[in-house]
Length: 455
Image 1 (tube, rainbow, N blue to C red):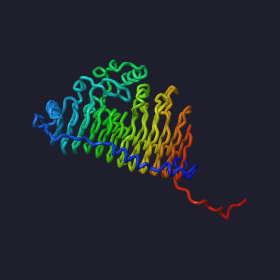
Image 2 (tube, rainbow, N blue to C red; image 1 turned 90 degrees about the horizontal axis):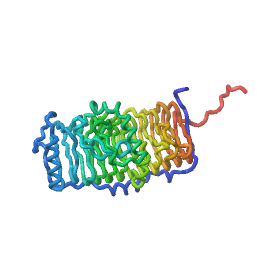
Image 3 (cartoon, rainbow, N blue to C red; image 1 turned 45 degrees about the horizontal axis):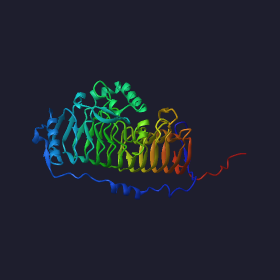
Image 4 (tube, rainbow, N blue to C red; image 1 turned 60 degrees about the horizontal axis):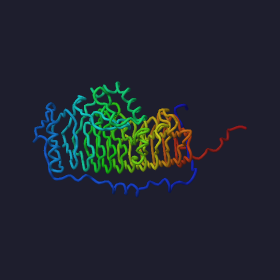
């Protein structure tokens, strides 16, 4: 039938069980390197400094005073009690500070772009620029945390959302600046431009904890881990449905643990990145690496994504025991093209439960059909095992290499897609091995010829 595929692929091209084992010892070494932030005992409650949780009054002066007091005391905890606190401008962290947002407390940021000036050094889709400040921003900090059971609301659905339709020229300009190596000091956006800021960005930071908070209504990417290391992200909840609301974006990041997250956002749940094109390749000494993702519930556009901005490289990623809650466009998605360069390698994915998707596993070196062909990426050594999917509306497994740079050493072990419109497409590859791969209804032993058959 046209829309039902009954296909059994039990292919044992070679015995790779040992190579495809999930390297738990490597995961343990990463976890041992990750340090939780050490926060001094000093504590200040924002209401003691004049903040009113009435959803109307501007609480930013009180939050700024609290951060200044923490800096004076070499760090401490800023407590946000029950209430709705409107901030007409960003929170800028200093080192050794925990922002504790208690249950039934909400920080709600204004959506007036002028409140996020002066510009700060940041990144936008893989290119370093000066732009509006992220709503929560930490630059060059150590030992910082955002915890509690409260909510951070980016108010991104009105003014910031209107920027999406106007961003095209600025997006193109960032890419031209990247490709032409324009001096960083001349990459100025902000007022008069339309590049939305991230909700939370940690930039050049170390020993980071984000735990148990709820993230809502981000203007752009929700949580951006930029050039940072020793990071723990756990227990978060999402309700972020604006355009480009990626959940978590590690970029040039290392030693990262992401666990026990309930995603519900209108783009990639987790997108691992490492800079775009010329600029990314120039930063090849800082790939995104040593990232552990486990025990997460996926809901949104895509589950776990590598790329497409990954020109400094992505390696040593370990994804384990995750599942979907509802529909995803793609479950496991690796994307790059011939402008990127860099590499995606040593990726281990196991124990993934997917409900309904468009495509279950999608690995492409020809994303969007873009690229001059001068900088194909090296995609290799990817191990996918124990992946179950109920239904793929389109294709169960897609692996697309680039003609001049084949995708290689891809290992599929114990993959089952119960229903799919199309089985698999594998192009421009080398050494793709499969064992116990089932698309459609599992075949049994062949039946014998019927006695009624005439010759």
